[in-house]
Image (cartoon, rainbow, N blue to C red; front, side, top):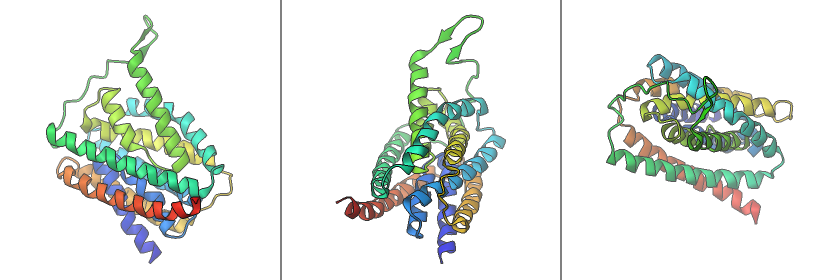
Length: 274
């Protein structure tokens, strides 16, 4: 029964990651919690799910021409420091606090996804494929002369560090922050921001998992494997159908699911905090 639950949940997580460029990974840790893992085990196992799933989605999106590899890699590289710091901080925090933080984060994610849906209804549909953005507009150059678009550079630095901290601390991908950051700070159209975000998430998840190695935290690897395999398959499908399905409806349904899981996690965390 536990394996079956992990399979179904993994498919939902992967579909969201592939089609929406983020959001799905927020469910990986709560699923593992519901299947009997501790908070630290769940967040560690979640990093495996997030990393592998994001990689699978990124490969598929790259083949479809929706990934700007250099920009995604640069964002992920900046986020590595935050990911390592977050991973070490997670081991020093009591589990009830970790659960409460996770419940709060899910409420924020649900709010951001709702706002994104409202903007989507006001703007153009995602199904209209965007023109490929220019690649000759760097934020920082040293040759032939020094040039810095400092406001944009600061946005990237702050957002990437925040994503890294969340990834390391709570075992989430942070796509709900990466996608708008790539769209605003790096001027990527949404069609490219979603696919490119998966590259950054893969890097930060790997860095956070490496930071946790050797800490003695060992989740149930069978559950993690079932969740990971089905999530990776779902991400591949989601990335392929992203331009063919009504992602607004999918996002609305997923927002409701995130709110439900947030309430469940809060119910578990609050009694232990009082």
